[in-house]
Image (cartoon, rainbow, N blue to C red):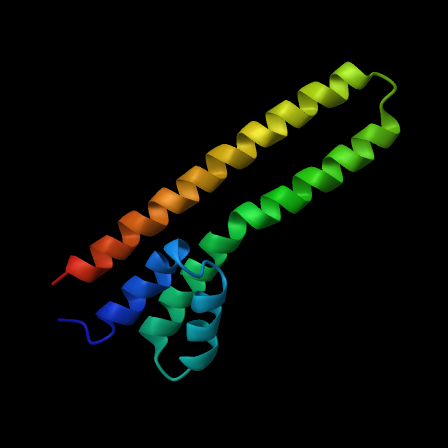
Length: 107
């Protein structure tokens, strides 16, 4: 039985209650414990991924809006980027829950 099972699981399951902040705090406080430190770091980046994609999408849309003469092309680009963002956010959410449950019930 791993001794960090609960904290490792909570790092992933924190997507339900404190998505980015909880894994960041655990990551900062567990430098002496490599297992918990690594798990919290992975959970942090997994929770931060949709935010980074959202900011990147906004920057791309802003730059393309300034460069493109055709509004229809910018509209389609916005739809495609939004679809990618939604898929990544749902995948991140589901993977965090699945991984948190796996760590909690692992032997």
